[in-house]
Amino acid sequence: MNTVPHPPVESREAWLAQRKGLLAQEKELTAQYDRVNAARRRLPMVKLEKAYEFDGPAGRVPMLDLFEGRRQLIVYHFMFDPDWEQGCSGCTGMVDALGDLSMLADRNTTYVLISRAPLAKLEKYKAERGWNLPWYSSFGGDFNYDFHVTLDPAVVPLRHNYREPDEMESRKDAEPYFQKGETHGISVFFRLDDNVYHTYSAYARGVESLTDAYRLLDITPYGRQEDFEDSPSGWPQRPTYG
Image (tube, rainbow, N blue to C red; front, side):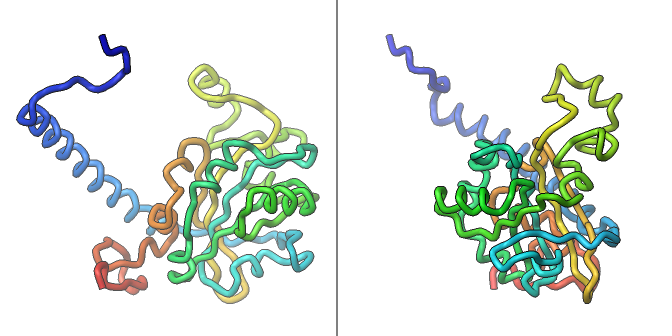
């Protein structure tokens, strides 16, 4: 008797009937995903009033430099506590899965990693992993605390994944719960002249599907910049299959 776990074996006709049923659900999900993306592209943005600075290969730089001259910036908040010698294994897996992100640059978008550990630790770990993504340190600054990826009630009021402490407490049996330490997330910023604006952040499972270029573009104000999308008038677009 075969003990290998596997799907039930049925006829081609039975498989096809179930596959068509699933296809209807997939199409419904795709349509809902498109609606959510359209709503995301219409979110307002908030001007950053703090002059955040980061340590990078070229020294101490303002946040504007992280854009590398492009219009949009995606930041992956990579968990790396200053006391750690290695980065978070889950975050490491996320970065390993990213693949080629050249499409982002082609569509006016830069992708960077930011962690709270000192730059020397980040560069050492980056070399060990063989990565070439830009990675900046927010060590000694407010950035991680302000975007709720370093939790410490002694520094900023406790809030994570848009939940207040009482809601976090009430859900502790359903999801990870802690009040202090590093957590991961993804944030999106938009540049107008010399001003930087925050447009989007996601945490916890809201990050897990954002590992390819299209999904990353989906969370930016301009989206994929293709003509099939329901975007506001004037948004940059190109032929989807052109």
